[in-house]
Length: 187
Length: 187
DNA sequence: ATATTTGTCGACTGATTAGTCGGTTTTTAT
DNA sequence: ATAAAAACCGACTAATCAGTCGACAAATAT
Image 1 (cartoon, rainbow over the protein chains, first blue to last red):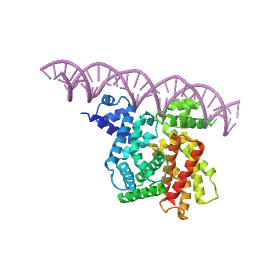
Image 2: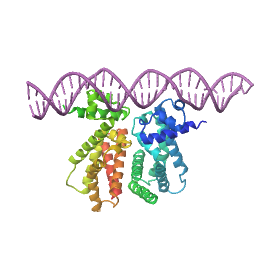
Image 3: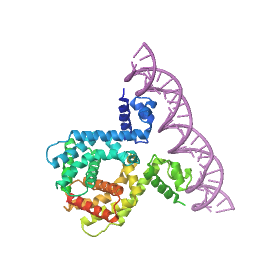
Image 4: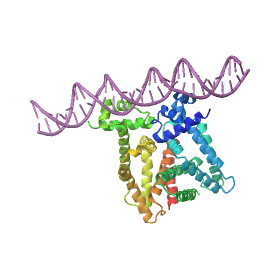
């Protein structure tokens, strides 16, 4: 049964999102995952390693989701919009994951993640942007700057939608409007 | 000497920004502040109370800064821009404070802060926005929505400027450009 | 002067935690 | 069938940490 690893990651995610990294003892994670204490340390040598592994796992799942749902045809704007919407819907459907990521990036942990790993995940998003810039569809500004702007808005909008509780359709409208606002800004 | 309280807050800020809330033992804070262990708990009954007090302290200082540097004359756009620039420059000059706030908001702690306290600090910023909306200077969208958008961009831009190291003048340019971008988007 | 309150100290404690270890079961390879 | 390796267990430990306590000092009040 190799899916005990998954069980551990899943339990850790739930508990971290609820009580934070340090508010969650490894013993509780093991119990919640239905494995022994030692088993946790069989898969992850340290708690830190578990946290980093969880981060990478989530990032991978997000990248997969966006890749899967990417429309390969259509205008550049349409494809970018697709990415934007997918990121937000994923975040809305995976608020534990999102809370974890937020906690993670505003902690000392990111230093422990190999640099290439990070870049690999962002490149997929930035290359579409790069193309849009080259085609003159959006302003000629540094890609990582634009990426930062979009990302910030995604983060912020998610928090906003998460703390108010709108109907599904209102959410959808807000997300759409926000993208159009962003697009106008970058055009 | 009642400024031991300040000494404790200041040491806590430095250490929290460096190692996170839970990576920082109270004993280390006391040592760094030059006071005894028990003294820390004389001023703050629990570690949590210290963390919340530090949050409120920082928020107050930020609000003061923005208020002090607010130009009372000038166009609405100019005043809004002033606020935007001041927030960013403050953040750039107080990265420990900023790191702390980021950590704080993506943790379970905000639940411990009285709601009025939060609203009090945001109202000052939102009321200028409210006026801009009423005057038709910017799009008629919910104030807190617009506030969220601006805030996200401030957060994101700060992170961006912090991780690249641009010259002062490049920073200034980027900040200016970003505000103009934002303004165009909201107009 | 005296009493009272407030601030300060640092040794101490009870609880908790990350991580270990020796042994058992399960899987895989031969 | 047998041996070797990998997964798994849970009691245990060494260390750490938040918070206490009783004693002392300084300031304030009477």
